[in-house]
Image 1 (cartoon, rainbow, N blue to C red):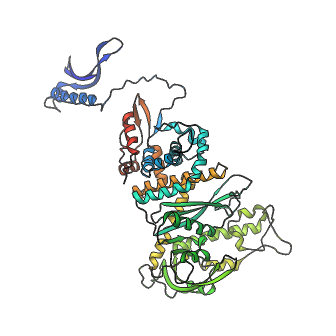
Image 2: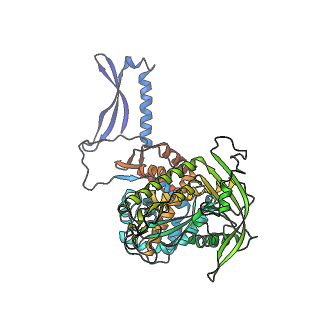
Image 3: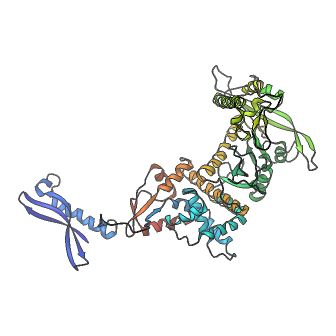
Length: 586
């Protein structure tokens, strides 16, 4: 096939066109067809001094491009029909996921762990599919399997192989977490001087409980059995370690087991643990300090409940003496923020092995701050709770124990049926609103207290460290919303553990993608972008892409993948994917 400039004599003058000369396979002879009209020679001379020379040069370049393979001429049959059960659309964004997956050497890990097993399937291939689909198309294991033909990969296994592999993944889950952490430290750097802890729960839409799935305090007040998931995160917001607990385990009881595991498995050195008040227990503080007032083996930055504090502590909080603004200067009229701190000796009650409680004195820095924004938010939330409390008093039959959402604290004499959870008036004890409790709570709107073992640490640094806890909350939001970690649709304990491991790996990969792109995009933006970078088979081995945004440009540049091309050959796609599986990312 070749292009040429041709001139045609017409009544108005010489007319130039570009023709395409090709070999007709059916008639076995050369043929020529019209490609493009250029115009009359005398008109073209107004634009080009020598139109014929100009277009011959252009045609020479077109022929060179075609010879080099950069341009093709396609014949399209507008009447062509799709064959039955046709699928010609493929995802290409998963190349970014594979970049991180292979940089962490997860392929090597899973292949090595399966080396001495008598599997008839490739566990690494199964984990790749489950990881890709969990990030791009979170759904059941069955749906993930049905989605496998959407990628340029050879997933040669059956659905039942996936479920069998889950048991294997559960066995090596802890080893996998440690392997990932070591690789992150080696290739991305990991800061464990601070370690953030939080607890969430995963619910199961079942009625019957077992040793792991038990009824407890579900974060959204669902009545379903749950499993508690404790997560540790490093100072950069990258997940470090997780551990599952029975659903009836209190948040504070998960802290020491997780912290011990982290110290033993990852050897992070001295750590300052950061957690909300769910983990702020005397036993946890005693453990971190090393069992003695003068020791500070590890440190802590915990939130502390003002409303549950002593009367003298509450008076200190409400006393305006000592408060400064953000810059440490005296408060001005109309201020919207204030902070003060003190070092205090506090008595804590520590649980001993024999079940008794032992009093212990600790030296602790207390940082108290107030924010107008937080005060307005707390006031609005409490008003909604109070409104619900009045409705419960007026219409108790409309509510039950599971629908209170914190309103019970403002109702005196509230009583529940132990079996049904229904609310009723006990004879002689009518429900009334607790005005004293509402007034007392209103005093502390906008006030927060953070306690720390780091006596010399500036107050603003303490607050800054604590605010980093929002990153771990974001991790849980990503796991719940973007990765659909719950509800869980597998029932065996080993498969539950495997499901959480898969979500953990996906969470790490998403966070590393964010880190590589300087946290410019949310996890949802990342997943949406990668999901939309897809292509369709246009002609033989030519694939047509139809998605490009600022997000895809930034991600592509960060990972060395050109997502700007409208068309790619299959060989080029395979080269990109092969490159994504090389361990060269830094």
